[in-house]
Image 1 (spheres, rainbow, N blue to C red):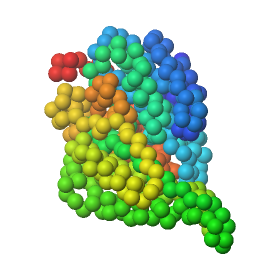
Image 2 (image 1 turned 90 degrees about the vertical axis):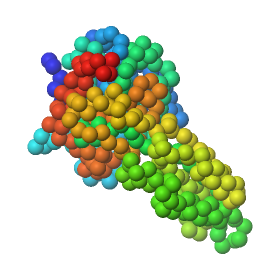
Image 3 (image 1 turned 120 degrees about the vertical axis):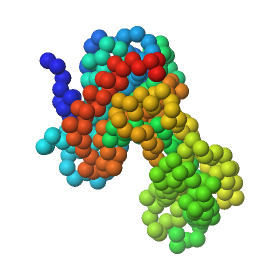
Length: 365
């Protein structure tokens, strides 16, 4: 019996695949749909020792387009309904990952099933480390053999072609103290070392918001995200803090050179005497408006291309082939406790993806 789009999407939502847990059950369910495809399983273990799997599937000759999506979701923060219900009410699929992005993944799979030539790049850990995209870019022989001319990353864009987005650099600053009962005076509170570092971060945040030299008017908002989270790791108020961390996610676009900001962060950490770890995502992907893949997406959707402030696996998969981000649903609902996607939007995406897979426009050949 042919799998329905609504049925497959709901099944995927019902499988818990938060980035903190294994995604093998989702990978196995997806692979069950890939009859007639050559399938490459790319297994790896994440930094916490959790087994993960990325999938590459291909059939037909080389030179086509790949459809890509991720299996993992963010945590279920804030949900009061069952996050994994996969409930369909009034033509709308509800649940964690319904929009971002198990519904779009189901649309990709069914479009690929109907096409004589198709490639699927299905990743894990997109919401955290981009680990699944990295193993595809670094290890996939099948993706290389497909000689892809383009990749469509099916993140929610309301089916508007997105030609570029920001990428991020993650900073983790660590200050260490000595734990003791705070009344004794024998402890060392790590926060006192962290505070001058945070003061410099506040200045950097203001610079990014106010200095036009750090703006990119092709994006909304034009200024870069510089989001700070401070953690004392559960220390009580009558205990001198032994460990204090500050984590920053800095997003920047293709036009900006982050090197001066990195140097300033490193200097601030040295001055305050705190440790600083820097983890870089791939470079910001951005195709020109006149790129053949962008032009093809514009022609088939009838929508003008855009840029977005959030990130996707395209920051890594661009090393395999040029990427356009194009998917059903709204990013405004992603990562929220009311996440949902209309089934009609998934069906429209399935039809669009099939047209993209079958389109042999000489401009993109």
